[in-house]
Length: 61
Image (cartoon, rainbow, N blue to C red; front, side, top):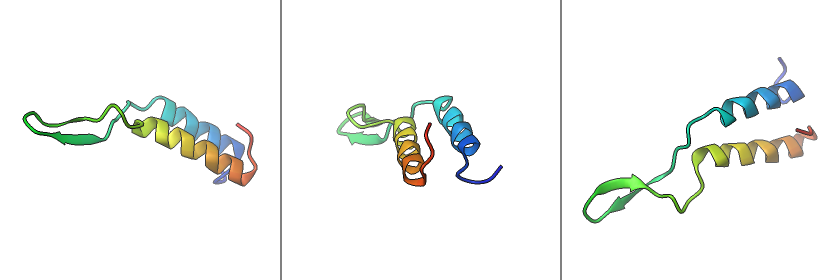
């Protein structure tokens, strides 16, 4: 499969959609590190950047 082909983008999108939501951690005063739910999850960031790259390369998803 050639990189940046339509199939490549579709497979990456499928991988990212099946990923677990991971949130960046923040240090709290008493509890240590906890997920920062105000920020975007890593899965959402990856999906968003994949759509941006597909648009850049001229591939419609």
